Image (cartoon, rainbow, N blue to C red):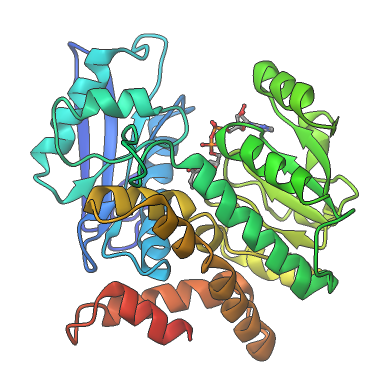
Length: 364
Ligand code: NAD
């Protein structure tokens, strides 16, 4: 399929196809927007069924980063990299060095960090080739390191807020939550939910990750295909995207969907399907910004952990503003969030305001 006619192409500023036979690297770096600053977004390494799936992921994820960074009030645009994993190109230091050189060649228009399939150690290797990288090991109490605990914190706070709005419950004691995927974010989220008194149902396709969750926490384990339809109050998708579809939504039993996974909705119309079923959907990029907030603060070199935490604690108020507008207008939450993000991008920098000032003004 062509790029410009691709259904997920959204006037992306540029797309960069990278291949390096020596290391086996095959990657796509998608820069959606630099209107608010350099395009920031993680690097995912995944085995895609075909090249078009990789392109689709890069296009959707990079646009999501534009929206996520805008609503979080960060002085960054949106971009994302996907590395096409294959048995012929196993993970290796040379693969990430090669990726680092590709990032360096963009001369600061794209700043990378870790995402699914990529670790802090991998980013350390990327740093050997480029300064345009974040999510590196932490030093002292300055911001940095693995962003996933921060993502989990933001999602946890958002779940509390959504439960308050939908179930009129002030705490999570006894509230049942199904967590799809107990990887980096999902397991941290389970710890926070358990500490708050929630009852947990989990599934994962990775036996090691599932074992760790089971050993550490009192979780009910269900087979992965059953997780979405668990009889729970909250569904927290923390695996991959495209799980909320015309097929799955009619069978959901949760009243709230709030999780970390990017691109949970297969299409924008699926947001309306959730609204029509009376399910409160917390837009993924609004509530999973904890990690990029940490990564951004680390990159800017300005902040300590307490400041990162304080910024993440503002995620619930952003979600509440979106839910309120959705209730008032009857529009699905995903569309309210998309419109808000586009307004921030359109007015950002125009009058000399920072992205943070514009975001605060429009979300107030
Ligand atoms: P991860 O790879 O550490 O964890 C994902 C987990 O989901 C793995 O354990 C995997 O086995 C499991 N999984 C995959 N398919 C599954 C299925 N069908 N059913 C059940 N489990 C399945 O990734 P992560 O860093 O925890 O990220 C999780 C999601 O959150 C991703 O969509 C990612 O893009 C998004 N996200 C992550 C961060 C972050 O800080 N890491 C930030 C924002 C968004």
